[in-house]
Image (cartoon, rainbow, N blue to C red; front, top):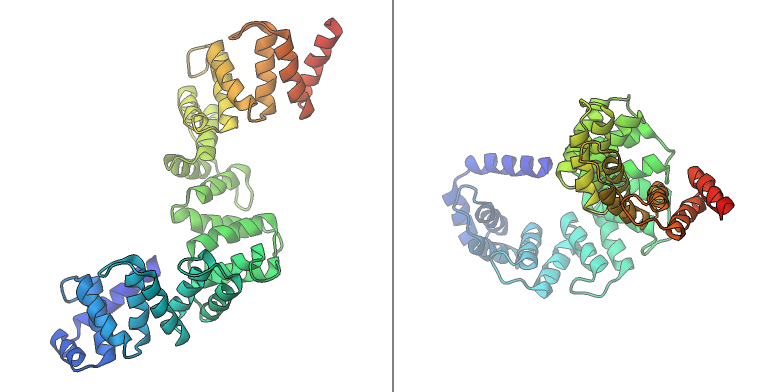
Length: 369
């Protein structure tokens, strides 16, 4: 994004120093480069009022003379339906003409058409061909897609090392998705030696660009001291940013930080609020924690019925702790009718997951008969 903005700013500075009338005169005399420049000026509203229809007109004139940049921009207009009715066939035609002349963004766009089957049949080999040509010119989206092809075995044999290499190149050129992918492969040691410091570094790049999942992972790394020093305040900061975007795992983790008073003052009501937001999205850990708060009257009014409701939702997702707590409620008749058979069922499911307390209670039930 920053690279795109700096490119536009540089172009604006150049255009501010040129004679628009002179460019128009050259364009009207058939100069393809001037036509392409005038099209860009109308497309972005630089030195002239923005007018997408005029942009298309000038791009077309230049494209028909073989001007490679104009061919790409005309293809984009047809692809997006800006300034001209959307037309996939025309988009493909002009992307291909530009790509065949070596334009890296056109090559990447054409590769993506084949990858997605947009206006053409899905063809992994053809997609890979165009992605590679663009990637070797440093086009970051193509580098990312090439890395993905090697990671998933699309058009090539799976090769984690080669995938990591292309993700690294794309990430270093600022590709947002590649930054997140690279963080994950360093964390898991896929195609590279596992490196928590590098993982934290790339999660931070992705998190700073607003990706909620990266913010959540970075918060966990600060909370656990993996790749970065333990810093509860930083953990809370990143959990909160992801939680505010609705990321359920981060909402649970933020609730946990309030629950324990880590990085924030201990606040049961605030913990319960965040647990509830995550629980309502189906997060099993949050459902267990919210159920526990109702069972104990922490941050919410005590209610065994509410506790049972949330324990059941988490238990149905296989959360062993919730299965145990629900079994205990059935065993004692709190919040639900006393039901030894249901208690044994849920103790048994928790025990199957090797949840130690469930073994004891299940054994007692069998001893009692």
